[in-house]
Image 1: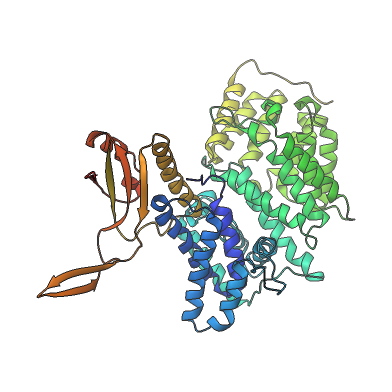
Image 2 (image 1 turned 60 degrees about the vertical axis):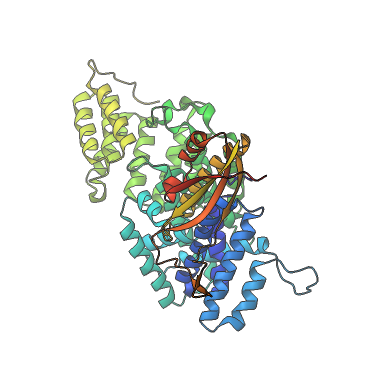
Length: 426
Length: 117
C-alpha cells in the first residue's frame, strides 16, 4: 500500500478549493468548502480499509467533482455547469480538440485568483487572513484559532462574515490587471506578511502550527513571484525577506525548546538552500525603481543571515536601513529595532536615549520587547538595578513560554553581582 | 496459522470537523498499522463497506421481503473489515489492540474464520 506522506492533504484541499471556486463561483464559497470537505471525509472513511488509491489526487478530484455536479443539479444549473465541471477537473481526452488546459496548468492561476479574492479590500484584515488560511491554505478552523490565540468559534464566525462580505461586495475571481493590480496586490502582501510573522514570532504558547504558517506564506509569495503578471520586484523583496528569516529557523530553538538569540545561534544550522533562494529573490527585487519597506526589511534580514558570525554583523548598514525605513514607515516598532542597531553602533547610552523616547509611545506601553531591550541596554551600560526593573516589567507582559524562559534567563544574568560593563561604542 | 476477521463497528456520523491535516494524520496511522502487518505477512486484506444501509432480506409467509437497511439513524453499523493471519486468538487480539479503529471508529468484533478444505 502506498504511502500518504508524499501527498500533502492541506495543499490538495487548497488547490481543490481554488478550482471549484472558479467553476462554481466565488459567491458559492461556502458550498465549495463543503464539497472539498466531503471529499476528504470520504477519503478518511474509505482509505483506511480499502487502501490508498493508486492516484489519490484523482480519487479526491473525482469525489469532489461528483459532489459538485450533485449540487448544481439540485440547483437546476446543471446544464451550464455540468460541462464546465467535467472539463475543469478531468484532463481533456486525447481526441478532443478544444483548447482545454490540463488541470495542473490551471492550478497556479486558480490559486492566485483565490487569494486575490480572499484578500479583497472589502474584508477586514482579520477576515482576510483567516479566509486565506482556510481556503487557500487548507487549514482547519481549530488550527487557525490556535495560531491566532483565539477560539474556534471566533474564527468560525469571522469566516461566515467574511464569505458574506465577499458575496455582498460582488467580488469576482480574477487576477487583477493594469492599475488595479498594484492596488489589489498590496493587501495580499500584507496578509502574507502577517501570516509569516505570526508563524515566525513565538508570541504565545508553543505550537508547531507556526512553522506551517511560515511555509504557507513562503509558498504563496513564491507563487506570486513566479507568475508573469504578479511577479514584481516588490513581491520578490517580500519573498527574500521571508526566506532570509526562515533560513534561520532551524537554529532558533535549543534542544530544550528555549529561544536562542542571534548571538547564541549555531549558524551552521542555518539553511544554505533557503539562503540561496533568498538571494535570488533579492536580486530580482532590485529590478524596479521603488524601495519599499519590504526591500529594506529584507536587506536588514540579509545583514543578519549573511554574517558568518555574530561579531561580523554589519550594524552600521543595518542602522542605515532603519534610518531609511523609519522615513517611510514611522512605526514605533521600527524605531525600537533601530534603537537596538544604534546601540550596537554608538553604544548602549545612545540606544537608551531612543528607548527613553519610545516609552512615551502609547502603542508600546504593553510591548514587552521595549522593556526587554531597555533591560539589555541598561545592563550593558552598567546599570543592573534598572536592568532588573525593566526585565520584570517585560516578564509581566509576556505570554509566550519560550520568550518568558529567555527573559528569566536574562534576569538571572542581571541579578549576578558585580555587573558587567561592556565597552561603549565601536 | 488461521485467518481472522476484524469487523469494524462504528457510529455512522463522526469526523465531520477534522481538518485536512488531521485527516492526513489519521489515515497515516492506519497506513502505518497496515504496513507493519503487511511486512510480517499478517495482513490478508481489507474492505470498506459503502456508507449506506444496504438491504435487509427476510422470508415471511413464504415471501421474500426486502427493506432498506438503516444507516444514519442507526447507532452502530459495520463500516468494513480487515482480514489478518494469526497463530491463534491471542495473537489476533494482540494485533487488533493497536488497530486505529479502536481510537477513531468504535468496537472491533474479532472472529476466527473457519478454514476451507
